[in-house]
Length: 301
Image 1 (cartoon, rainbow, N blue to C red):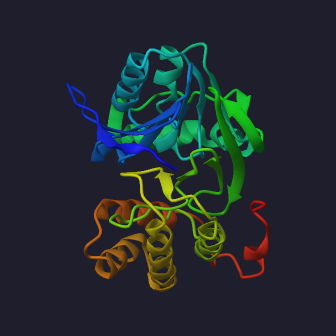
Image 2: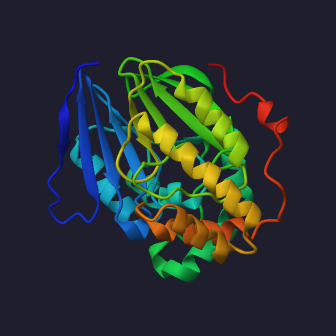
């Protein structure tokens, strides 16, 4: 797929970074929050006449920057899609929904259910750390993402559902005409630590191996930090293999994080390992999913 080089948008007074990729009839604007927002990405897909936004940021300030940038593109937002139920990807929906009241907020049914059941508790915990920078009430997606092929904002997508990876349930989106994979938190940039907040190590690796075999999808849009390429598959699998061993041996979250940082001393965002250790070891302790469990089908390739 031929496209113009990646361009970096001038910052003006914006704290986040915006990277733009140009394709015939489509532009992809990726907003990357500063580190205190976990470098969360909002991918704004600009079609011929409308926009579709993927993920809503953690902090209200950065959601407002996304809203301001999207508004300057001069096209209505048709839909805002949440990839999974971790609050760094949806807490800012309150801001985006207010700015774009005619846009539908959508997610997979299981993702919406998780936000409905646990959203208030998650936000309460975040407000202890961030105060009023995080929404007080969750904004629930009201539209449902249907699996398979569909067109949004004039852009063809194919939607798939993944289970037991970085989160319990996550959307995967393909843009077949541009051969772009929106992987979100399925994989991480090779330069960064990964979030490992659930002990799905074996099955997560299995899903990565399956999608690594997809041909043609060289551009991969992820959930945190700069977009990556196919190197992200091997880098994430290598990280998960070590993370599984650390999880098995570590007595607590702090030890788990220290072991990961020692194993990957050159990776950026070591605080993500600390965060993962706190969350992972706050769950009921059990063995990672068995090989038999790992055989269940996530998607049709």
